[in-house]
View 1 (cartoon, rainbow, N blue to C red):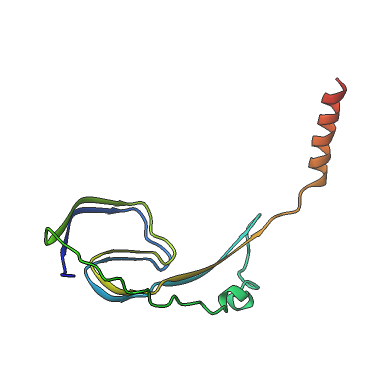
View 2 (view 1 turned 60 degrees about the vertical axis):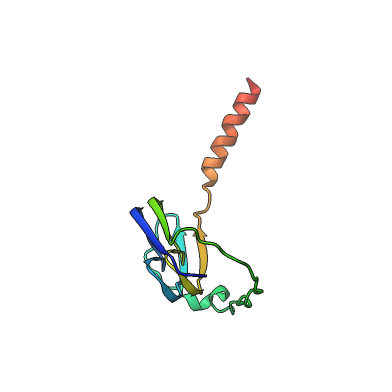
Length: 140
């Protein structure tokens, strides 16, 4: 397949985060990766102590690689030497994602994410108050 040139008049990107790649041009390999531990606690967290990545098995698992795909022979006819686009709008690239304008031989991307949500215990008095209101409505 013969190489082609990509022509883009305008690109608008709102946000790029967490090991993501936006590339203009050709590349031999792109390898974004991210290990993310997200902890949410009602009332806030005063320290990240006790939330080390190495204590969670997801960050130690071996990532299975995909074997080379089967070769498919085919004929490609490019009627023009250029790919022309007027505008590209991207809302967000996040967590090892790739947007590339150009050719690439190999892409190796992965993301490991562990979410922890620590909720405060429910207030028993509040629950009893709701139950009492329901009983009152049922009686009337």
